Length: 317
Image 1 (cartoon, rainbow, N blue to C red):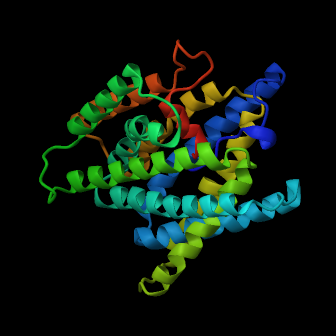
Image 2 (image 1 turned 90 degrees about the vertical axis):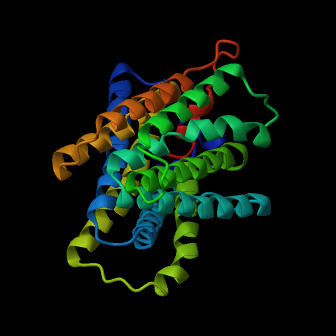
Image 3 (image 1 turned 45 degrees about the vertical axis):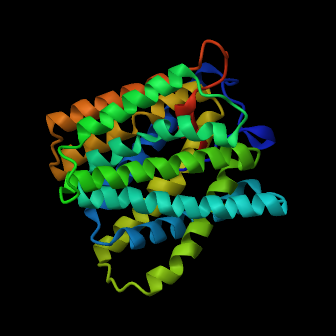
């Protein structure tokens, strides 16, 4: 999930609509998160390496979001040179994040990939002071320790020959890169139109990966091409549009909690459609991670209205 946080002059104004609009917003955000969760299933199903998956996803999302922006809202004004550099850097980080995420799913399972990716609040906690003039809070450190404990529970042993261990390592790398992406968005590009940022980041990711794709021989089948189209157009571009639209009538705090359901949706999809049954160890470790992420999404009492680290999930879904 990689949606820049709506804020600044281009941001939707959440919570200002009627009850009916709020219900529509709730449905839109749930639908978006459900589609994001389904992306992991497609990554497991398609017989294409992660490099090809990410290239196709980014290319299709960039083109479709760009066309949508041109049709509905018009192109945003030009960016300052510094923001162009940061946007390009964030696109590279997005590519790295997705590569690690799909590698995790392909070497292990959808559950392992999604749950270990959800460890990103641990990294946000310790990286945040490097990006902002903010000190570490004991509450956030405690939650990061809980996330670390959940990761430890997920790993059956620490032999890298074990595929679950490999998947957990790649998934944790996906969480780390997601944290960097969230913080880059929050610090440098959060005042820009969210869909424009998403389109730009996906375009950069596709451009960066294109030379490697050209040098990597693989032959996707017609079925693979169809699944990749669904991944890029539906589970990425459409999901971004739904999420941004939902935020226009839904509080960001509520959306933050809903996005925590992404692993749940993904695991249920994998169980029903692929027959992937998570082990008891995976479920316990995942529950610990998700509980910590949910707790981190609640605002600190000492700073009303300020969301803690896991709210960064809204900054680049």
